[in-house]
Image (cartoon, rainbow, N blue to C red):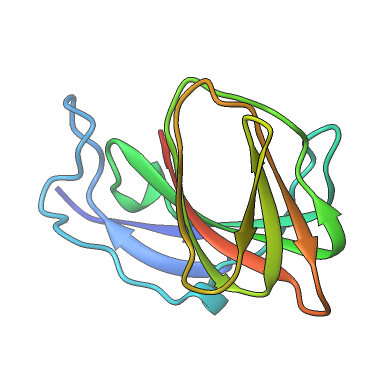
Length: 139
C-alpha cells in the first residue's frame, strides 16, 4: 500500500491508510514537538482565554486516547463541567487552581491530578504566567 502525505496542524507526516481495525499498518510511533502543533482557541461555552493543542490524536495513529496541551491565559478559566471519563493532567507551567467536587487544589509545575469520571471540575489561571497542562482524554 502506498503511503499518503497528510498535512495536519502545519506539519507533514506520512502513514499508510487505516485498515478495518482502525489501526495504521506499519505505523509504530509518531514524533513531533509541542511547538510544531498549531494552537486553537478553545470555544467551550463558559470558558475564557483558553487555547488548546492536540498533540496526539487519531490522525497520528492513537487508538484509544488523545494528548492535549491546554493553556489558560491571564484571568482564564474553563467552564465548570463533568464527563464520563477520568481526566488526567500534568501541570507544565504557571500557577492555577483546580476546583474538583467543591475542593480547591493548587496547581503549579509538576502537579499531577486525576479527576474521576463524573466529578464536576473547573480550572482557573492565577499569577502572571499562563497556566499550561497536558491532559489525556479518550478518543
